[in-house]
Image 1 (spheres, rainbow, N blue to C red):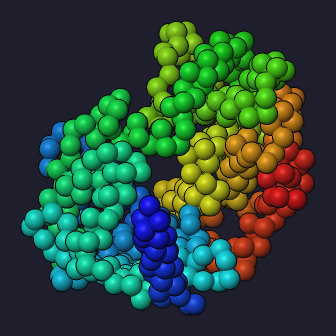
Image 2 (spheres, helix red, strand yellow; image 1 turned 180 degrees about the vertical axis):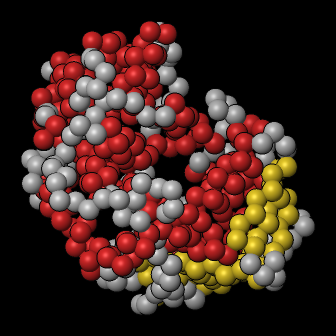
Length: 439
């Protein structure tokens, strides 16, 4: 027994030593890559085209999907990823020999970085990676893929990692494009299949456990909304919804109140948002035909500061925050504005951006365990439009690509950062949002 105990202690020490050594070798003092590509009107347009093509391919009835991405589109995705996750910088370079991918991630402690590189090779037999380097640690591509498969299988769902790797049938490259041929397992795309990706995502985000509660608030909102005329203000509808949460909250624990607040928010974004939100938030019970007609009228007429577009920006940003994080929600709001800055769009609007950031902040408050849930409930039960969104007076709107570039250059410029800071100062001026700034 004593011999076994010594062996166990020695083995544990050896494993800890190996892991510590690997971490030491993986961490660097400097970033290997710098972000060369910024979110801007042209990159937003390239991202949109790539996403539209990707959606078209995945929605087709053909079992084999062909996905083509250009170098410009890869740069655009890099810019969007960096804006959504500022700690991550990336570079993807395409050639006939394959794709060279470099990533740097800024760790929160002591300005240390994790740098990674890999090269994806042309292959007619699935995904082939020549090698993966993380800091000074270098492993073969096959070993890296097998480790990734194991993690997904063990931590997400059994066999899911194997299925995801087997999706890629072959990969080919030209000087400036990558072409992926993929064969998707039908079960992965089925909306309500327990092994489907959408169900896995819902469970990971915690919406499956809340589906009954969110559905009850959705049904309540659909019924109560019948008494609101066309063109009502969003604050009054939020009042009635969170008054119901407040009524139920009297005998609930703080974490239960937070769950009710989140469920009511899911109901709100489902009511005013796209029907496809249910794919991620969970399927809701159908409402009556009369309620459906009323919902359609209110979706297109309910306003925030007498503007329907601000209501939509506010609601969709709440949804994005529930599904991601503050940086990603803000990045997608900027992405939409840069699309509008292109020809045919309404132009970049800092007023829209203010509504985006207000919706993001409200969803942050509702889901933050460090914020008093009952206080948020009570505030929303009586909130006014002026308390929900600051004045948009004086904010530039309708800026097209050339005007934006001339005035603000790019999103890293001091002029643009100052403009965004002024928006946040307006939000900080409202009592509702102050806790979301950590002050």
